[in-house]
Amino acid sequence: MSENQRPEIPRHMTPLNRVVFASRWLQVPLYLGLILAQCVYVFHFWVELKDLIGAAMGNQAALSHILDAVTVPGADRPDKLNETTIMLVVLGLIDVVMISNLLVMVIVGGYETFVSRMNLEGHPDQPEWLSHVNASVLKSKLAMAIIGISSIHLLKTFISAEAYEVKVLVAQTVIHTVFLLSALAIAYTDRIMTGTQYQSKSH
Image (cartoon, rainbow, N blue to C red; front, side):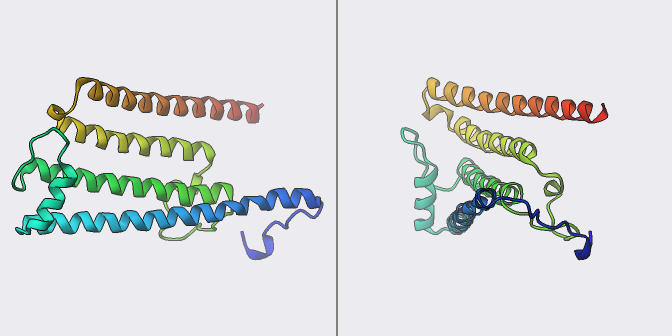
């Protein structure tokens, strides 16, 4: 659509309607705050990665920091970098990346859905999912991202399962299962709503 063909803003809106509609811009500081939170995660990622590389090269201070971060209370603390420790650190880095991806979906998708269009059509870096994003799609993608984050935490727990009580393992497994069922319920509900809208339009 060219600039000359853009729809004009309705002129029959009452002043109250304009105020209510403009209130969506109050969400902008929230999204800016999430961007700052993303910066914190980026900083945390590079600190953990620097310590991992330093520990691998024999830096004792970095090794101590890594072991403090991954050693579960009650578990035997290793005295050197081993495969399990490296795996736990890498899973922690993956966890940070997945949470960062979740933040991007909330910031970009939420702003596009609830605040203002970003007019990214034709942009080479436009995310594939953003071209058809709406509240339902955003909920489904957020649910899938949360399941991925929960899977990482559950895997980290099972790697050090001997340091946890059985009730803790069961509780985390149940919580992860609830996330899975919730995502399935959201997807099924969206499918029903999409089918209902399609049938109503066809009639």
